[in-house]
Length: 355
Ligand code: ATP
Ligand code: MG
Ligand code: FE
Image 1 (tube, rainbow, N blue to C red):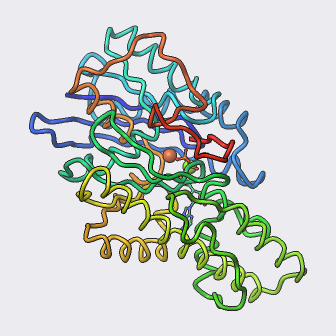
Image 2: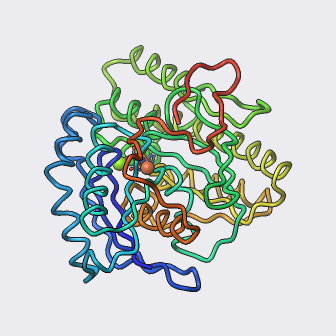
Image 3: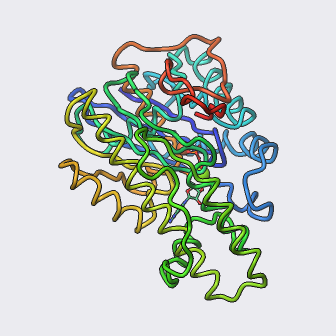
């Protein structure tokens, strides 16, 4: 089964062709990702309108390139999958409409994929992982712990009640005038710094739920930075080290609660899987390794190019759904918000329902 996947929910314009073989194994025939980082860098973050226009300009070429590299014609496709949300609505419309046009012209089934579902199923693209497993997704837009029980069966065990983890890294970088995207810059500075110089709060530590909070920590870093302005290079390093240490401790605590909740409801997870740009952080990987070992499960982190936004994960989620006969109609809507767990509610006491 050959599936074309299209991803345009944020600042990557991406398309890929993935083959799902009869035994359920995957082969990536092409995976083209065009990051728009250079278009957005001077604004210090993703500008939705610029992203949407860039997707319009780039997507045709990227799809053509993905098909050419895979050496596949549109008539050979079993399905066309697009990320139909959650994400920046302008970009989502561009990708989903393109997929609908291809599906209509070539009379091919359409699959409207939830972007988070695609992250959740990525480990099955790279290895033969059985359900259920526990996903930790931490990117610029999302921070979630999800029980992946089966295709289409996801239970959100924890989420951020304010900023996403990658977003917090980006904002901390920005307040110290480090370039965008800030995650890798903060990681580099933190490696040189003294994590003990500042005693930043450890958000949510010891709470019985598995939620995250990052905005209080971010504000604590900002207050400290403002107090010391102008910052010397060692100040930047120490602030980054202090921030990252707090994120690590909070993440380890939140994940061990998440794994406990997982165990109570679904038994032993087959693995702890990390995805999203933040999973590239070496210190975070180390912390995840410890958490997994303590919960007697294995840590799986897909290769970085499949952890961040890409078309192959959309194509693969499409293939998994197609194999179960789960196709969509031409009126599948683009969605800015789309909870992975259809029944998930915002945690009690919070009004923020970000997916
Ligand atoms: P989405 O949230 O829709 O998945 P995104 O584009 O924001 O999309 P990714 O591309 O998966 O997400 O990840 C980008 C984020 O990961 C940025 O916020 C970036 O700062 C963060 N990041 C990347 N590398 C690191 C790192 N080494 N340490 C910490 N954060 C990092
Ligand atoms: Mg991105
Ligand atoms: Fe993503």
